[in-house]
Image (tube, rainbow, N blue to C red; front, side, top):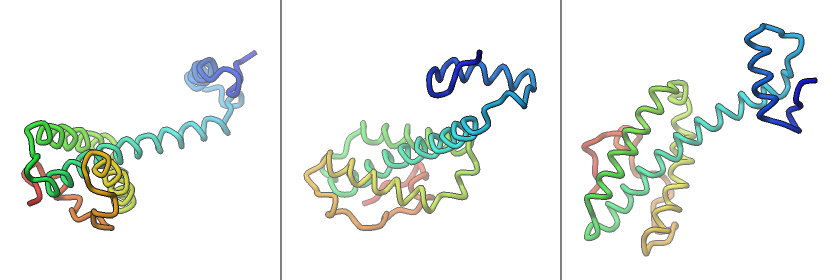
Length: 143
């Protein structure tokens, strides 16, 4: 008897992978395979949102706290830009969702920036003040 999705996810995943290798389509649990594939897609999108949010939050801190600028902020911005670019290269269909992703990333970013500064979330602009191209531009640091 094959492991059930609800009772043994690991066993179900290994068993499902083998069924796929063996092309035993009639034995596959399509409903849960579809659910897991959709979850994988959401996970990739959320990872990209989080990378952008880290860049944006540091750009906001850079802009709103100029006297506290540090090399660690620069390195964090550079690293997260690189990670975001790699993530987008690996998942190019996310480009079609950039408007939605940027809205979500900015919401997360303002929460992060408020947590790390003396500012309240409402002290930051309602909409992201940076374009996607600026966020990803290694030379861009707002004044």
